Length: 278
Ligand SMILES: [Zn+2]
Ligand SMILES: [Zn+2]
Image (cartoon, rainbow, N blue to C red; front, side):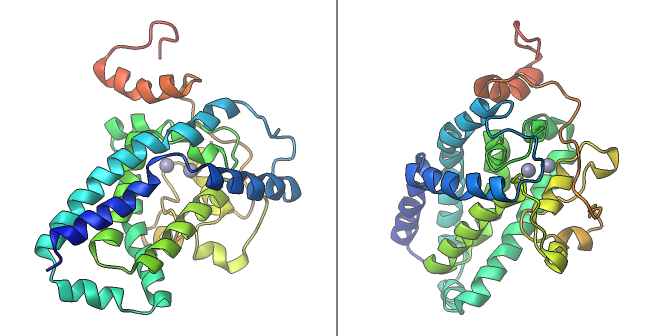
């Protein structure tokens, strides 16, 4: 059985994600701004489109509440796993080749993501929080960051619990986290990039753009974050052979970061914002 010291050191390792990572933000801008310019899907969409300032706030500030929540969840998970999981199981998982660990991790993580994401669509109380993400009307890499912290803590937490509990090696976890990060930005990006038959295996822009489409036929479809085939398996795939024209919901949403974060909480307390009535 792993010791509490192992758990504490892993806990510390996770804390690295707690503050805005300026280098990563600059790298992301350097990759996606040219990519969306070269392979632009909705060409009329401006770089500084509606609500870009709100989404910059998400990009820079949201990591703080999200990391805090996820760190608490993972710290508990790691401590519990250290108590109940035989050390030999963790050693066996961590000693598998990286090419096997990474897809296994994506599968376990995405099963968690799929279930919690689907729950956020199905349960009215949770939808109030997830509606913030679905308020995106112009898709791009920046809009990917518009997620209510409680929503992100739950979906990302569900993805990361098996990743951190089962003893995967630090190198494999690093590769997994890198794929997770770039794939989630790519699938929201304003790009017309197509991936042939891979679009039925992996989550791609076409797959996730349809998740955000305004069409009624597209509602509550394409829940996976990384493996599109999970939606085929569970009968929730909706992916016409073109990209959607319109995105979003008919639910009104205030513009500022803090008003969006507060909105579902205000709704639950029955105390709408006196200025916006939202
Ligand atoms: Zn959704
Ligand atoms: Zn999305």
